Length: 123
Image (tube, rainbow, N blue to C red; front, side, top):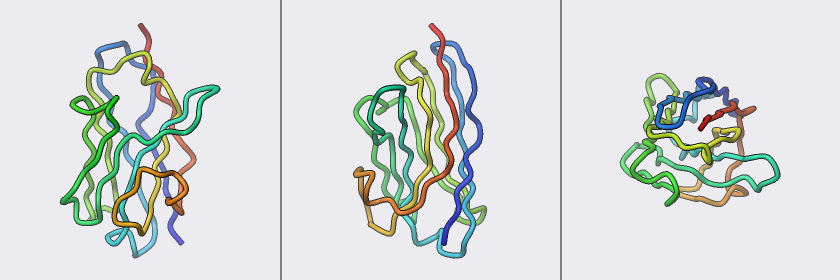
């Protein structure tokens, strides 16, 4: 089993930055691809970014490419999402997730989920 706990959300003005963190428990962290998803009110949960177990490959949704950066520190069992140039449309609950699949942007491939952290971007 893997448990995920996110932190770092908050309220920020448009153009600002936030860094989300997700700490994982369990000894298999280093063999899992980690992803970030988000869900805005009334919308489906959508893929944001993913990073493979070694950190060698990263993937991004078109809507965040060039603004968000995903990274991981396997020694600390932690994955990060650096969010720059935030826009009001980035407002959502952000979820950390883990999958044994090498890469996926499909939410149902992810077996483990955190509780979510709220990000609100004001205009």
